[in-house]
Every structure is written in structure tokens, then in C-alpha cells.
Image 1 (cartoon, helix red, strand yellow):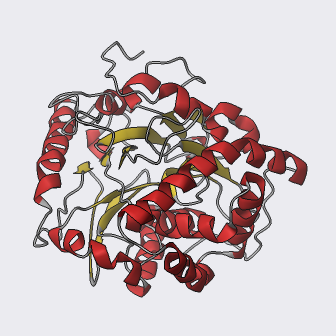
Image 2 (tube, helix red, strand yellow; image 1 turned 135 degrees about the vertical axis):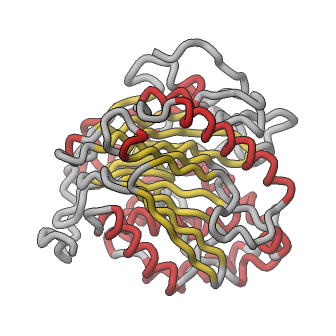
Length: 412
């Protein structure tokens, strides 16, 4: 059962109001950049912006009051309409699903007998992502910390302006990630997306981390939400603590799960449990090659998987560099998928709050090869915004380390 400290209190204690407003203003350029991309993606898919915003207003009750308050404050600071930012937070995955590669090793597969969790966050580019300082056709990623009274503390990575997590960890030692699962059925229905908008996986992950103290509790929290409202797009959710890794796969009216307490789990953008779902052929080759490569590297390190193993995985260019490599790069033009951030969570079962969160912003093969605090950093899951260099909170680190070029230098 959840611990007694999980109360209904929802006041955020991580910063004074003045400090938080100042941070949000500095985040403003990245928020406006991401929102321009979201609007353009709606237009590109023929989705009516007014209707999407109305659907978001109808679904707003699915977000806690604190989240709505934060989005309102962010919208004011960035000078953007709240309803647009709300729609972006809720429906970005419906409009532009994330690619991604996730791997986790637990038990005897690791050097320390605990769990090491890895997530590479990928996304397609868009012509709308341009302008002074934002010419890279990509969505800006930032580090996010959350310390609400009476809930778990959370550290992770989001798109600037959104509260939905791409990956993260709480101070109870639970890490999460997710992937889009490319299916032909979803692709064929794209024209009707505005009729079946759903809350993003990232928001479900965030709520699970805030409420759950173990991988099982977080997975149960997420599964309950999925039974009420399916994922915004077919996808996979991975949840891990020091004892096990849980995988949930969902598509419309289907939900499947499995867990392991000893071994390796790898997912790219294809289902492993709901494998009767017809995959989208254009994505299947890349997904299989990335998953096969991850499994090969982790098998070679069996019994000794550690943070360094996962960082090597993150910068790997086998089958590329390009769409088929784990560190993905555009090969033809900016609409290709590319890796935008990465995380490795080293989970300490004895002292969960002392677990390590390694977060890299920008193209992983560049970010991981920079100095600590420049393109990547190590944080405790109890970290506050004051513990994070400002460049990681505002998107500057991402802007410095996103690159279309591959970097094959050594990783320290």
C-alpha cells in the first residue's frame, strides 16, 4: 500500500513564488518554440485547433489542480494562451508520437544486483521549429523537478512547457519511461485523431511516480488510468524499481503486462506482448534493429550491466548513424526521427532516495561526451530546481548539444 505520507496536500514547496516566476520567464522562449511546433503539427495533420482546445478543456479534470495551476503560471510567463498549453500537455503524443528506445537490467544481469534503467527519447522534426535560436526543427527538452508536499519527489525530462514526463524517477527509487508503438491501425486512423484524443502517457507516468512507492504500485496506478482512458496512441510503459521491471502495453481496448526480477528488458517501437497488432511497416525495421542492437550489447555485459553500459548504449551508432541506430540522427531531412535526450537511472534498493539520475539533453552522442554540468548532469531524485543548473531548466543545454552530426569520440 502507498505510504501514509501520501496525503491530499498539493502545495509545491520547491521554490518561492518570486524565484519560480523568474524561472518560468526564462523558460518562455523554449515554451513558445514548442507550442509553435505543436500548432503546426495540428495544421499539418488537418486537425482543427479550436476543436482540439475544446477537447482539452473537457478533459482538464483529469489533471490535478496543482498541474492546472502550474500550466496557467507557465502560460502567463511565456505569454501564450493557457488553453493551447493545456492541449499541448494533454495531446502532444496524439499528434506527434515519440519514438524512443528503452532498456533495463535487473537482478543478476547487473553489476550490483539492483536495477539500471535507460531511456532514449526520440521525436520527428517539423518545419515549424525555426526562428532565432530555434532553427534545429526539433522539440526543446528540459529537466524538471517536482517536490509537492505529501507526495513523492520527482526528477525527469519533459518538453519545455509540458508537465508530461518523457522519463523520470521518484525518491522512492521508481523509474519510468515510455515508447510509441507504431501500428498500421493507428496510422490509418490519423485523420480522425481529433475525435479520439486521450491524455498522454507522460502525464500518466508523472502521476504514477507522485503516488506510487514501488514499481508495482506505480504500474497499478497507471493501469487503472489506462482502463478508464486508453493511451493517446498505442504504446508501451516501462516501470522499474530495484527489485523488478514492469512492462505495460496498450492499444485502444487492449492492455497487457509482464514483469521480471532477473534479466534484461528492451523495447523500441514495436509491441512484444500485443504482437498480434499489425505493425507499421515503415517503423518496424528501425525498431527491430535498435532493439536487437540493445539486446546484443546488454547480453555482452551480462552480469556486469552498469551506468557506463547504458551510456555506451545511448551513444551507439551501429546500423547508422541514422534512423536505425540507437542514437538516432536525421539522414534525409529534418522530418526524420532524431534522439533529443537520454536518461540512465541507477536505482539503490537500500537507499532509494540516494539513487542516481543521469540526464543528458540534446543529441546523446554529443551531450554525454561533454563535461558534467554542461550537456549532462547527475542528480538525486530528491533534487530541487535550485540543484539544477539553469541551462538545463531553460533549454539552453539542449540547444547547445542538439546536432545533426554524429560524435564517435570516447565517453568518459
